[in-house]
Amino acid sequence: MKKTRNVAIAGVGQTKHRGHREDVNLAELVSEAVEEVLADSMVDLSDIDAIVHGNMELFEGVHQPDMWHVIADGGYGKAGYRITTGGTTGTTLVSAADHLVASGMHDLVLAIGFEKQEEGMTTTGITNMSCPLWDREVQTGAITGTTGVIMMNKFGQKAEEAAAELRVLMATNARKNFKAHLRLDITRKDVLDSRVLAWPLRLLHMCPESNGACAMLFASEEMAKKLPQKKVWMHDHVTIHRQEFFDFAHLEDLNTHGEAARIIYTRNGIVNPIKQIGVFEMYDPSSWWALDWLGKFLFMENGEQIDMVLNGDFAIDGKFPVNPSGGVVSTNPIGATAIIRVAEAALQIRGDADDHQVPRDINLALASGFGGTFWTVLHLLGKDKPNH
Amino acid sequence: MFIPEKLPVDKKYCGGKRGLMSIPYRYYAGLFLSKALIALRDEKKILASRCPRCGKVFMPPRSRCERDFAKITELISVGPGGVVEEFTVVNYDEPYFMEKCEKMMKAPFTMALIKLDGADTKFLHRVKGTDIKHGDRVAPKWADERSAAITDIEWFEKA
Ligand SMILES: [Zn+2]
Image (cartoon, rainbow over all chains, first blue to last red; front, side, top):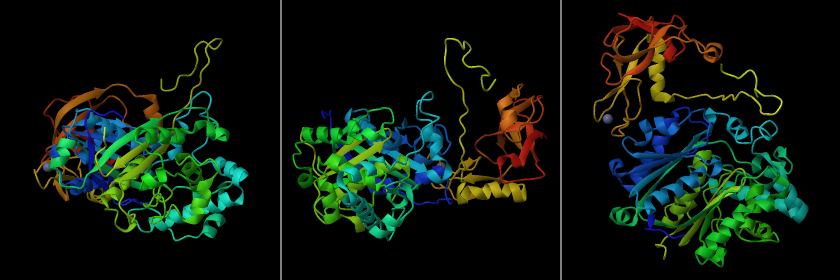
């Protein structure tokens, strides 16, 4: 991507993500993340020029939350933007903040994603996303077993073992991340014995509903030089949208993940992602999707990722660490979910991921966002400034 | 008219549909602001919050100062009397609200931004009657059955 100027991540902040946060209201939840990003970046709120703010529409039943969250996010007197692109909201927040800084419009931009899922009913928002004439009355929420069926038809029992193993890996990682919501101690058998939601998708394969917020600060190169925190550089990002009918049986026609990866790799000279990219924070709404999507992002047409999962190659100390944070199946405050991917990737590059830190130097990190119906936002971050 | 009775108007050539979006929610006040709601219910007391940095007194109470981002932890008693700063007279009963919302007041009545004694901000409530002027002093009429909500004050009336 051609940029007018470089953009750095100057700080990150996250709440602890939990199933219940009755102790705070929605605005207070947001300010916890803002407080932490200010502390992490050592920046004064008054130096921030603009706030980009986002969550899922209608999920908490609040219209224009960006307006009244000024009482809680420090937005008073600053430029404000609201972003709401479904599941990808968080990664789109990052894209927007990057654009605002790269363009020269602003020097310091704060991006905030949040969701307090205990307060609303997600189906309210999700069913109203479809065409009012043709889809609204007949569609359901976000749970689908189709990918699992396709994978089992293609690869047999091994795929089911691998999806379960991937869920166990996410639980193992989440237990190292005190901010993760579900920090389960589970085995492959627990996953395979859990309740069927839509065969072969089971309860433990699926992401939870979480309450949480995540904030990131983006700075121009000039501004970043003056800031004390370790910098992570925005290298590239791409958004592939493809709104189609709900044809879940032909997902291969909607390979926005593969398309996004192809563009990012080509533009940034990545010929061997497993070797060149140190960590991947992937938006994994279910372990079945995760298993399929790893193949899409890594261009594995014959299911090689299945063996890699069973081999432990995606573990924190494996060949290609995926979701050391525990991923979306462990933590899912939706409007924050995708920005958490980018924030966690940035922490990995900084070496600040504490107990879930990948034990080696990371120069490049990948972070993906996913939203319905099948669109992708993919970010590439680096320890060094990009050359362009 | 909150839901068009007939849609489309031209049934022969124009298709369409009508519906009703329903958005269930629950909203947690949080531990700090719950205290102000509970004071309405249990003590008929109006609590505002005071910023430790700039001293601004927020009513409705807020847990962050919007100007300096200070975390607010102090609640102070304000009112119960106050002054009407701005107002408008409601002359129309919206059928949808009358049907769906609890504790609606029948028109005509006044909606006013009231600055309670001791507060630095104005808050919105209803004032009984329509003979209201800027600067009128008003006092709350408390509900007999209270549920820790703003409607524990049924309305304000001229004091
Ligand atoms: Zn203040």
